[in-house]
Image (cartoon, rainbow, N blue to C red):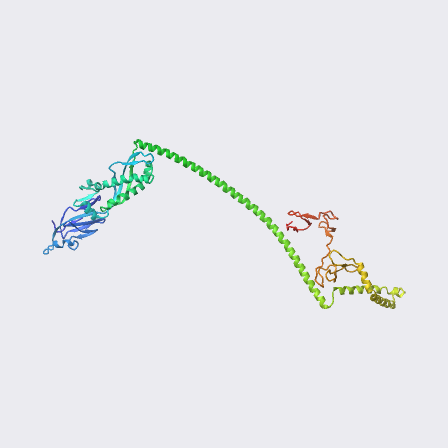
Length: 485
């Protein structure tokens, strides 16, 4: 043996554990461990040390157990040990299968059928020391298939009973628990694979192996079995019923959709019509409200005008009272003046001459003045009898031919002009007698109140289209309900 030797892996990729064939080395020997590998040294029947990827020299520094074996004179020592290489790569598509058929009892009819199961899995070493100690021992190595690697024992042989037992025990139960139709079992291989993996992995991990993926790829159905043929016929009938139910549901859904659409369309149309009617009513209501507000505005304006006139009358009365006289005094002075002038014209006749002498005028004036003083009460009584008293408004109206009409306040008796609206003495509102004449809008002439003009025959009365109240021609709003004409 040479003083130095190189130890490296020389097995194939399908091998999980490979033993280096030589067992005698010296402290000048070097070890090479590739990626995804590890090397385990056994010395004196014990696992001495484990080496990961890298290059190492087998000396006392790297393997302390070899310290006592080194020759102190030459520094070189020969020692005996075993080196095992662990392949930690994932072995892909490792095939598995049951050694016999799996009995399955169909739950609907209760008839038994036998099915076969097979598949593939990915396998890797998770704990090389555990696998080496518990399964390999002193063998030269181990692989999934012993025939390919010339090993005396294979993983397939070792784990086939475990796989068959777990598949037979759990496949039928999983199909029943998930309510899978045996005829449609191929559609559920993924779900069944996950169930079987969870049952099988613990048995492999006990020996330092792991299963990253487990696949149930094929379930062989007994097509020639009479019981299975009955199951297929039942499945066909069930499928036809499902299709008929699905078609009925589709038709029902379509009918419900059409009915729902028609209902929604009718509701939308009804809402549109209701909105239109609401808009019309709102418009009519708005016009009515506008008319009412206009009538109220006119009434408020008239009240404001009346109040302003009343206040103006109060102010004028206050001014006249402050000056020490009232309207009655002014009117009496005018009457006396007019009466004196009338008596003065009687001077010539009284003088007896019929002429216009100065003496006659002076005599007439003196006689008139004396007569006025003597006859003043009679003249007042005479004028009172001449002018009629108005009974329409409660105020007395005096009319004299050729003089201005006057009226009296019904409250204080103060004499006022005939067209006065308020008393200048006490401020009382004077009600004016309502005129019996109106102006015809057609011919423009005055005519007595009535339904027709006496001059041109024009109809003078309209009727409110809302409440039927008669309205004078020319009115813009109904005085009863405020409707715009």
